[in-house]
Length: 152
Image 1 (cartoon, rainbow, N blue to C red):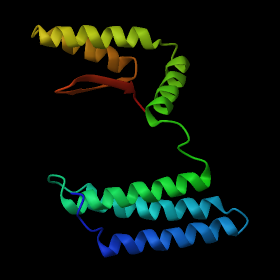
Image 2: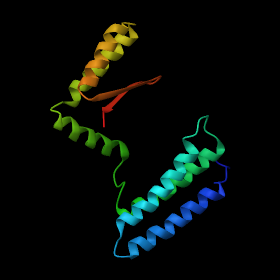
Image 3: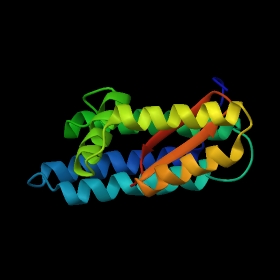
Image 4: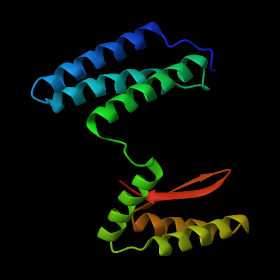
Protein backbone atom coordinates (compact mmCIF):
# COMPACT_ATOMS: atom_id res chain seq x y z
CA UNK A 1 0.00 0.00 0.00
CA UNK A 2 3.02 2.30 -0.10
CA UNK A 3 1.79 3.87 -3.34
CA UNK A 4 -1.64 4.89 -2.02
CA UNK A 5 -2.40 8.61 -1.97
CA UNK A 6 -3.95 10.10 1.14
CA UNK A 7 -7.51 11.19 0.30
CA UNK A 8 -7.81 14.93 -0.24
CA UNK A 9 -10.56 15.33 2.37
CA UNK A 10 -8.36 13.80 5.09
CA UNK A 11 -5.35 15.83 3.93
CA UNK A 12 -7.43 19.01 4.27
CA UNK A 13 -8.58 18.05 7.77
CA UNK A 14 -4.98 17.45 8.86
CA UNK A 15 -3.77 20.71 7.29
CA UNK A 16 -6.58 22.65 8.99
CA UNK A 17 -5.80 20.99 12.33
CA UNK A 18 -2.09 21.86 12.03
CA UNK A 19 -2.96 25.49 11.43
CA UNK A 20 -5.44 25.50 14.33
CA UNK A 21 -2.99 23.79 16.70
CA UNK A 22 -0.27 26.30 15.92
CA UNK A 23 -2.70 29.21 16.37
CA UNK A 24 -3.95 27.73 19.65
CA UNK A 25 -0.47 27.29 21.06
CA UNK A 26 0.47 30.81 19.93
CA UNK A 27 -2.61 32.05 21.81
CA UNK A 28 -1.30 31.77 25.36
CA UNK A 29 -0.66 28.02 24.95
CA UNK A 30 -4.36 27.24 24.63
CA UNK A 31 -4.01 23.47 25.02
CA UNK A 32 -7.76 22.73 25.25
CA UNK A 33 -8.23 24.25 21.81
CA UNK A 34 -5.18 22.41 20.47
CA UNK A 35 -6.55 19.13 21.82
CA UNK A 36 -9.92 19.84 20.20
CA UNK A 37 -8.13 20.11 16.86
CA UNK A 38 -6.35 16.82 17.55
CA UNK A 39 -9.68 15.13 18.18
CA UNK A 40 -11.08 16.49 14.91
CA UNK A 41 -8.35 14.51 13.18
CA UNK A 42 -9.00 11.47 15.39
CA UNK A 43 -12.70 11.51 14.44
CA UNK A 44 -11.87 11.79 10.74
CA UNK A 45 -9.34 8.96 11.09
CA UNK A 46 -11.87 6.74 12.86
CA UNK A 47 -14.48 7.42 10.18
CA UNK A 48 -12.15 5.97 7.58
CA UNK A 49 -10.30 3.14 9.31
CA UNK A 50 -13.00 1.81 11.61
CA UNK A 51 -15.22 0.82 8.73
CA UNK A 52 -15.80 -2.90 8.19
CA UNK A 53 -13.62 -4.76 5.78
CA UNK A 54 -9.97 -5.47 5.18
CA UNK A 55 -7.21 -2.89 5.21
CA UNK A 56 -7.41 -1.00 1.93
CA UNK A 57 -4.88 1.31 0.29
CA UNK A 58 -7.05 4.25 1.43
CA UNK A 59 -7.08 3.07 5.05
CA UNK A 60 -3.34 2.50 4.97
CA UNK A 61 -2.64 5.97 3.52
CA UNK A 62 -4.92 7.62 6.09
CA UNK A 63 -3.24 5.68 8.91
CA UNK A 64 0.21 6.82 7.76
CA UNK A 65 -0.96 10.44 7.51
CA UNK A 66 -2.54 10.19 10.96
CA UNK A 67 0.65 8.73 12.43
CA UNK A 68 2.64 11.59 10.95
CA UNK A 69 0.21 14.16 12.39
CA UNK A 70 0.20 12.45 15.80
CA UNK A 71 4.01 12.43 15.88
CA UNK A 72 4.09 16.14 14.95
CA UNK A 73 1.49 17.01 17.58
CA UNK A 74 3.21 14.84 20.19
CA UNK A 75 6.49 16.60 19.55
CA UNK A 76 4.88 19.99 20.14
CA UNK A 77 3.20 18.82 23.33
CA UNK A 78 6.12 16.70 24.61
CA UNK A 79 3.99 13.56 24.36
CA UNK A 80 4.96 10.07 23.24
CA UNK A 81 8.51 10.53 24.52
CA UNK A 82 8.91 6.89 25.50
CA UNK A 83 8.17 3.67 23.64
CA UNK A 84 4.44 2.86 23.75
CA UNK A 85 4.89 -0.65 25.17
CA UNK A 86 7.03 0.71 28.01
CA UNK A 87 4.51 3.45 28.78
CA UNK A 88 1.52 1.07 28.71
CA UNK A 89 3.34 -1.37 30.99
CA UNK A 90 4.06 1.50 33.40
CA UNK A 91 0.35 2.47 33.41
CA UNK A 92 -0.75 -1.13 33.94
CA UNK A 93 1.74 -1.50 36.79
CA UNK A 94 0.27 1.59 38.46
CA UNK A 95 -3.23 0.10 38.14
CA UNK A 96 -2.03 -3.30 39.38
CA UNK A 97 -0.43 -1.64 42.40
CA UNK A 98 -3.68 0.20 43.11
CA UNK A 99 -5.51 -3.18 43.05
CA UNK A 100 -2.76 -4.81 45.18
CA UNK A 101 -1.95 -7.22 42.34
CA UNK A 102 1.42 -8.36 41.05
CA UNK A 103 2.35 -8.72 37.38
CA UNK A 104 4.00 -12.10 38.08
CA UNK A 105 0.76 -13.48 39.56
CA UNK A 106 -1.25 -12.33 36.55
CA UNK A 107 1.32 -13.79 34.15
CA UNK A 108 1.10 -17.12 35.99
CA UNK A 109 -2.71 -17.24 35.74
CA UNK A 110 -2.61 -16.29 32.05
CA UNK A 111 -0.01 -19.00 31.42
CA UNK A 112 -2.08 -21.59 33.31
CA UNK A 113 -5.09 -20.59 31.23
CA UNK A 114 -3.07 -20.96 28.02
CA UNK A 115 -1.94 -24.42 29.11
CA UNK A 116 -5.54 -25.40 29.88
CA UNK A 117 -6.62 -24.20 26.43
CA UNK A 118 -3.80 -26.14 24.78
CA UNK A 119 -4.89 -29.24 26.70
CA UNK A 120 -8.47 -28.52 25.56
CA UNK A 121 -9.57 -28.19 29.19
CA UNK A 122 -11.92 -25.34 28.34
CA UNK A 123 -13.78 -25.55 31.63
CA UNK A 124 -10.57 -24.77 33.54
CA UNK A 125 -9.64 -22.09 31.01
CA UNK A 126 -13.05 -20.47 31.52
CA UNK A 127 -12.66 -20.57 35.30
CA UNK A 128 -9.24 -18.90 35.01
CA UNK A 129 -10.62 -16.26 32.62
CA UNK A 130 -13.44 -15.53 35.08
CA UNK A 131 -10.91 -15.30 37.91
CA UNK A 132 -8.87 -12.82 35.89
CA UNK A 133 -11.98 -10.80 35.05
CA UNK A 134 -12.89 -10.68 38.75
CA UNK A 135 -9.43 -9.21 39.34
CA UNK A 136 -10.03 -6.59 36.65
CA UNK A 137 -7.81 -8.19 34.03
CA UNK A 138 -8.92 -8.38 30.39
CA UNK A 139 -7.46 -11.24 28.32
CA UNK A 140 -7.23 -11.16 24.53
CA UNK A 141 -6.58 -14.39 22.64
CA UNK A 142 -5.02 -14.56 19.18
CA UNK A 143 -3.18 -17.06 17.04
CA UNK A 144 0.05 -15.77 18.61
CA UNK A 145 -1.16 -16.47 22.16
CA UNK A 146 -2.89 -14.61 24.95
CA UNK A 147 -2.19 -11.07 26.05
CA UNK A 148 -3.63 -9.25 29.03
CA UNK A 149 -4.10 -5.76 30.31
CA UNK A 150 -5.71 -4.17 33.30
CA UNK A 151 -9.31 -3.46 32.34
CA UNK A 152 -9.88 0.25 32.05
